Amino acid sequence: MSLFRIVYVSDAIGVAADSLLALIDIIGVSDRNNRRDHLTGVMMRCDGRFFQAIEGRRVDLDRLMGRLRADRRHADMRILSDRRITERLFPAWAMAQIDAPPALKRLLVCAPDDPQIEARVERLLTDVSRAMTAA
Image (cartoon, rainbow, N blue to C red):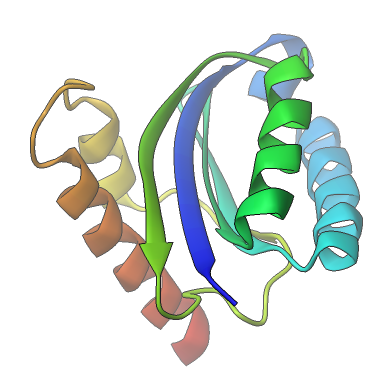
């Protein structure tokens, strides 16, 4: 089975930008849906933006991305990375949520056409995965 990882950033809209209850709702629904669809990943909210990495089969990721594009709680979705992977970084997490590390804030100021963006994203996700595993 081929696995893929999609990483995107989007602008949070309305209460989704700063409400803890809205974030808890998003994580809860995402966790349930991702378990059903055999997806794993992590979400971070930083400075009014969502940063999310999702891993799974292409068909399941494409279906999720369609739902996410229609979700009115965020806008201006930008794909930072979409690649084939050999293993999941977040195998135990249908949808983990963590506080944004300083590296994410630095990443979010990079230009979307930065040729190093995908490598920066992968380093950030690897560090986050290691920290989650160690905790």
